[in-house]
Length: 401
Image (cartoon, rainbow, N blue to C red; front, side):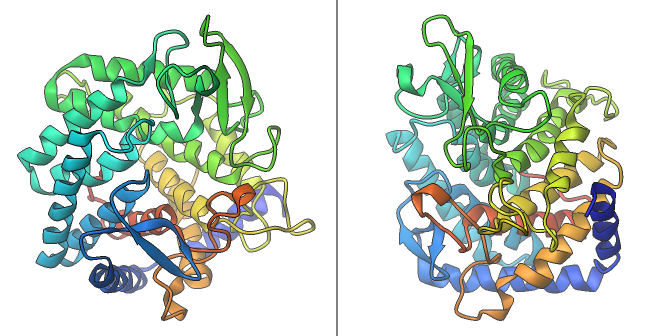
C-alpha cells in the first residue's frame, strides 16, 4: 500500500473509536493493573514479560516509571484510592533510589521520574513529588557534556566509548523543562534546549529517518557518526527509534512554544511554526513502512515479504506522538490517524483474550539482537497504549511529561 492508502485505512478505522469503546478499553486496563498490583506488591515488574508474565524486581531498571505511570493513569480514570496509595508508595521508593543514586548512571532519569514524581505532582500537587522532580533533574543535568552539547546516554560520565546520545533521549528532556517551570531556574531549560538542537542535527538523517545512537569525538565534541544499539543495522530504521522522534519532538516543542518557563503562567498560542521542518517527513517514513495490518515490524528492514517480529509498542508511542502533534496541527489528520492505530491495537493486539497474560499489549520487542522480550508485552508498550486511550477519552487530560 502507498502512504496515502495507509493513511486512508487508519482514518477509516478511527471511526470505530467511540466513547463506549474507549471506556471499555480503559476499564479493562485498570482491572489488569489492579490484578497485577496484588502480585507485585511494593516491588516492580520487569521491563518485558516472559511467556506473558512480568518478573518481579526491585526499583533498579530504567523502565520502572512506566509501572508507576500506569498506577497514576488508573487512579485518574477510576478514582480508586488503592491506586493512589500504591503510586505514592512507589514515590517513596523513587526517593530512596535518588538518595542512594542507585542505578542512575544513565540518561533515562526522565523516563523514571516524569512518570512517577512528574505524574504525582500533576495529579496531587504533592510537595514531595515537586522536590523529587528537581532532585532528579539535577542528576540528569550532571550528564551534560559541554564538548558536543549533549546529555550522555549511558555509562560512566565522560567514558570515551560512551560519548554519545540516543534518540530515546527526546523523552527525557521534558523533566528539565518542568524543573525550570517549577523552580524558575533557567539552567534546566537551557540544557534541554542545547541537547534537543544537537540531537535534531545529528541523530536524524537528512532523509528524515533516524539513527538509534550518535557518537561524538570525546576530545573535541565534534559529531562523529551514527550507529545502532537495538536496530537491525547501523543503516536500518529501528521502528521504535522513529516512534521516539514522532513523540519526542512535539513533547519538547510544547514547552519551547507554549511556556515562558520563567516562573509565570503566561502562555503563547501553540503553532507548528517552530517545529523542525522535517517533522512531517519523519511521520511519513513511519507510516510508509507500516505493513498490511498497520502494526510495524521491529525494524523497517523487514516487511510482509521479508517478515520478522512485530513491535506493537512502536505504534502505541507513535499514536501518543500524533495526539501531541495534533495540538499544534503539525501533521494532517493526526488525531484520526492515532485513533486508527489505537483501535487496531485494541482489537488485534490487546492481551484481553489471554487471561493469564499480565500485559496490556501483545507482540512487542525489547532488544531483538539480545533475544530480550521478543513477541512479548513490555512496560512502555503497555503504558503508551494506556496513555493514548486516556488522551482520547479525556482531551483535557494533563500529560505527565
